[in-house]
Image 1 (spheres, helix red, strand yellow):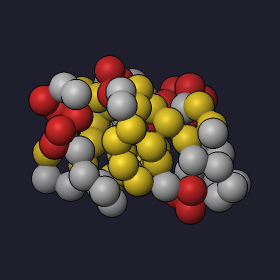
Image 2 (cartoon, helix red, strand yellow):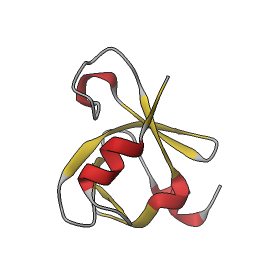
Image 3 (cartoon, one colour):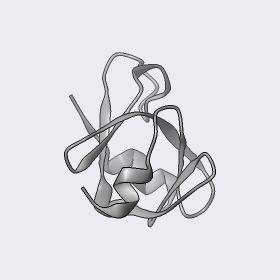
Length: 80
């Protein structure tokens, strides 16, 4: 697990590099951030979505900032 991944905690906000909301961290599983079902990118609330840890630009306070826009992150998040 990367140093940044080890700083990611449950309930942190995940935002794009444009500041747009992507989701809320459920937990880190391996090399992916698992987002909560209730705040998932497609809005269905039925599936967990995953974003690769390699997409993380920074982690600070209660926020995970990605290296892509929120729209791009929502489009590329994979569902389980």
